[in-house]
Length: 190
Image (cartoon, rainbow, N blue to C red; front, side):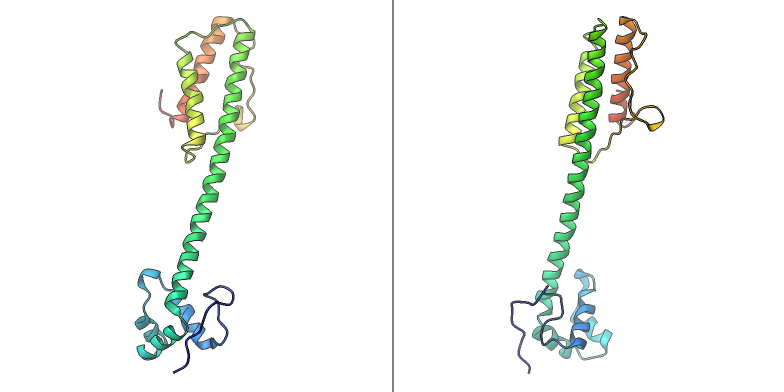
C-alpha cells in the first residue's frame, strides 16, 4: 500500500497535492463537490464504478476527510466575511443617512429659530424621538434602510419655511417630523 501524503499542504489543502495523480484528485473533487452533510465514500465509489475499499484507500492516502473539512471551514469563513462586509457597508450607509437626516432636522430647527418661531413644547418629543430613532438605526439596526430625498428623488431643499408665519413654520416643522417618523416606522403613523 502506498504511503499517506504528509503535510503541510502545498497551496490550499483542496488543491491537487504533489504526488496525487490526476484521476485520484478528480475523484476527490467530485467527493468535495457533494453537499457536506451528504458526502460519502460509498457514493463516490458508486459514481466512479469502483469498490468502496478502493475509494477508502484513496481517501485515507490523500486525506480527503481532513481536506474536505478544511475546505468547508474555508467556505464558511468566506460566507461569514462576505456577510460581515455587507453588514459594515449597510451600517456605514445607515450612518450617512442618519447624519444627513440629523443635518436636515438641525437646519429646520435653525430656520424656525432664525425666523423667530418657536416649536410647541409638545412637538419637541417627536423631534427628539426622530433623531434617536435614526441614531439607533445607524448604530443598532443596520438592516433598515431609510432614504431621504427631495422632490422626485432629487436633493433635499430646505425651502419649507419661506413665506410662512411663525405659527405656520411651527406647524410645518411638526408635519416634517411626523413625516420622517412615518418613513422610519415603515409607513405607519407615529
